[in-house]
Amino acid sequence: MTLATIIALAAEETEHHGNVALETVGYGITAIVVFGALALVTLSYRNVANRHSQKAEAYARAHADDVQRAGHGH
Image (tube, rainbow, N blue to C red):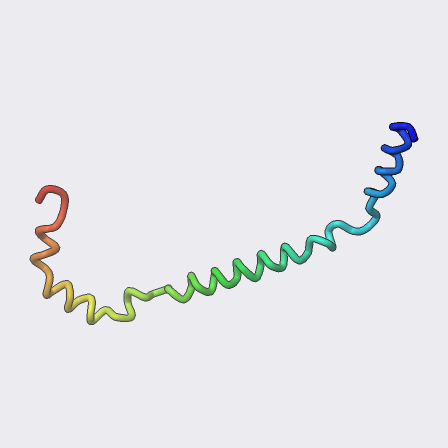
């Protein structure tokens, strides 16, 4: 066999006639599912600070002196 024959046979074997887009649809679906789950996690933390505003206000009143003394070099 010559080099040209080997290359021609290798090209025939690697030739693919399928639809590549249909073979990769699973990656897109997986990405949509993952990003959807991450969006749900992100939305679950929405408005968390206001859920316990009474506790936050009580803590701020109790530790008002600590907050004023905190900072860079104060």
